[in-house]
Image (cartoon, rainbow, N blue to C red):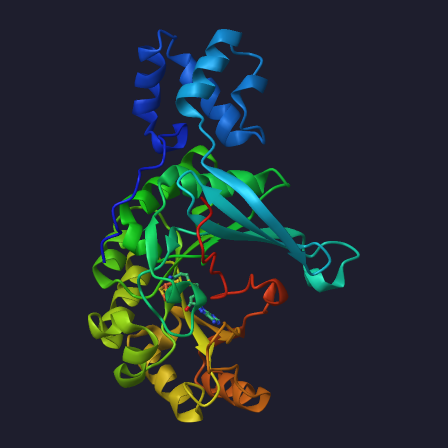
Length: 363
Ligand code: SAH
Ligand code: SF4
């Protein structure tokens, strides 16, 4: 599952640990306090252009911009839906690879399609260019893996989103399998929760079930929310829907998710894309409930997130019938499993779950 060799992205301030940032300013002949000043500008304000940081000497600004603030992601195309409250951006990386991120605003006054409740925003970002996991219902999985993103490239997507206002939630549900890019993921999470001040509880890392990495994540002291993309309660079907299941079967994946809950106290999300006549039978809902309850706490350690399958090019599958979806929900609720059906925001701009496929490169 190694990423193909590719040109490394340029090193960015966001790729450095706090101690390395201090070393960097000292090496540039600057006093130590400049590191904190630069951190505040880059991580806590909307500006990412050192030339505008006027409390730094002009020469230092230029020097910094050249050395530590290369442009990592450049917008190629922006598409909006839901009256402008869903914004999908296609980004070009330094080597021509493409990724996408989607910003969703909720509860915007006067815009019904942004949904009810208080005003908040969620960024769905990418952790890899492409994905090597080959799930057949997912557009990203069809193109294979181009390469891992650097921590700087992950953080750059967050930084871009904060320019439009405060960001409440970040979900790693764009392109890529975050746990297959573990080192850069952890680095990015530390920057996001530490330097940028985002709440770990508001961050969701979604995985197809890389069991050893799920266990490792539980010990990082980063209480982010874990989402396990299960999609089937039985190995026979999951082997085909999520091929990594052949290495880490259902019981191991759900066991690791439960261990994550026990270690962090964070309720785990179980993602389940409802696919018509494939995984939406009532008996599978019962089997799912039994599986989740079987791990303990009467199943109160999970929250099931049902996702009506989003259409992807060339796929013969489609979303479940409304009555099958209702029955599936009812069966879970009857067994006291917390369940919600996810909205399909961004669907018409191919910005919904599993529709992100930047496809071709841009050189
Ligand atoms: N690779 C990670 C995270 C990115 S995918 C993972 O698989 O968890 C984010 C979510 O979108 C996953 O739950 C994934 O299973 C789901 N998904 C993929 N394709 C989809 C589709 N066509 N319709 C609905 N959900 C989909
Ligand atoms: Fe990769 Fe997730 Fe898509 Fe599977 S669903 S191919 S793991 S992005």
